[in-house]
Length: 162
Ligand code: FES
Image 1 (cartoon, rainbow, N blue to C red):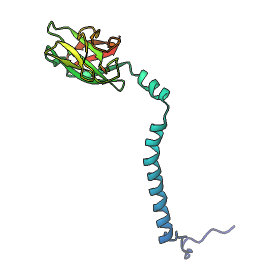
Image 2: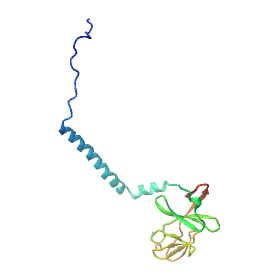
Image 3: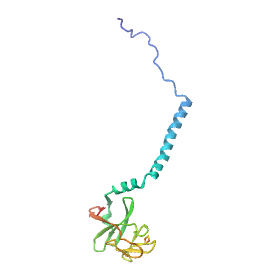
Image 4: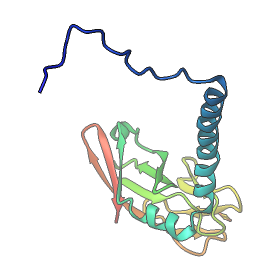
């Protein structure tokens, strides 16, 4: 067996042929096509997702932390989202707190706190709710607003399903 001659000239290493313009354009079009399909596909997927899937995702939300909400002045309210739906956090004059869904039980309009009326008001058809309990007190709403549990902590308010 003979030893290889390391000093002898070696054959040139294989070189990779440069990417042709045609292949480069094809690769670019493939990448652009994939990005375009993803840009169209994801919203379409979200749109076509069944309401049951949406409901499951929203039902999985058990609590929301509202940073700095503990500084909400008395006799005022703030809107926030709980599981994708509008909700109201209210700080009452007697320093008690209430968290309620802000979806009117009549036809689903978003309600708001009306300080002058000392009530939660639905501007769609004039429905009124008690701001402490969410009870429907006048107008067309057939049911009270859903209550959440509001836990006031330093620097935040944690709202959870009651
Ligand atoms: S939707 Fe609120 S009173 Fe009709």
